Image (cartoon, rainbow, N blue to C red):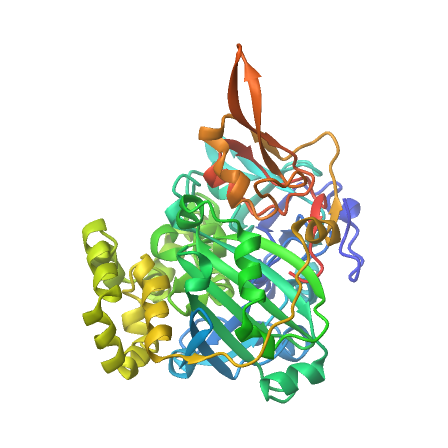
Length: 568
């Protein structure tokens, strides 16, 4: 177990003889930081527990951080000096590139990007979360608590069936009047409470990202911006083998975040391999104009992402436990609208407010109901699960409707319509209302963008000489503290039928590659042959993909163990 190195918090002294706190926040990401700051600033004795060796070392994001004008909380309001010290670049331009072969059709997403937006910055999670953690520790310590790193919260402490605290690998059980689970998409607390599960692949996305080294002056020159500007670009079309989803590029201070995000059910069904889809984007001629002459990849990372349209919990609480951020499915992905961290911040602040109100009325047990009411009254839940999607989007996802739209889009009539309505489609991409009703279909994510590029696009000028590392090299470049003898994943059914999808869906595994987590092999059984899957957790990036697509028992590694991201 380790303490936060920059703030010098002595974990042993913090819990010696003090097994209870008024509030425990699990996870020191944006949602946890917001909750802890609001609680501590109002005198609540708050302990923050983070399983990474440093806040941010276990976190991955695309990532764009928005501050919405309508949002109840934002990080720059909670933490003065935040943007100057902890973010990368203000994102002042946003585009969507529809690709077909070497043709590209670009849509300016400025209107939807600026809709309800006070500011938007690119971020890298290790740097941002570590900065937030220092301030969180200062404020929680002043209220009688603090922040501990290297601690994995492994479950809920119950008495008489009621939640009264948390249990940890590294510490004795800790009691609390309030438990805020801000422990991410793989939240063990949310699953133990029965509030979230991993049963349905269609409720999840998988994101895979490379951070590419580019000197600041080259970023400015290649994107025609200055040091106080940044660019976001999204990519869709025919380069992703028909898998539903797309790619992104965000400018950082001295690097580019380039990645892909796909619906997990589509990724699994197509038996597509995430690292190959990422490489298809990285090596596309269109990206050659922005990549450096000498391609140098700082880090390869991946994470599971909840689709809030299907996974956001309408009542994310049980007893003293309140879920915020990815743990509650609060990740908005509606076409080119991709927002998550800002919603986690709002949820964290609202959870803290709910507890403060409940405590002031001497009914702390009512915090969960108050939190539920706040996420609905604030409009947060309607943003995450738009009613128009439930009516129109779900209709569009019915097989007969989806097949009909796919056929029309590819037909001669459909192509004539695309030519005639090119400008209208551009406005549709900039409509939050229409995007909130967008169905999750191949037509929406692959076919229509491809037809747009084929009918309205222009040939890409220039070449792309990028040579991304192999999967083996990417795994080798990551930092791991392997927990020898304590595997965090158990393969329950090793048959190919039950767990073979993990061989291709896992971002550090691949068919024919023997160095990843999952491998396929043929063995002799009772005189015959059987296809089976084997597992090695050492190269795991802890994304949780296999928990959805394979028959496994999945937990986090012990505090500080496993992969450690330097960029995030």
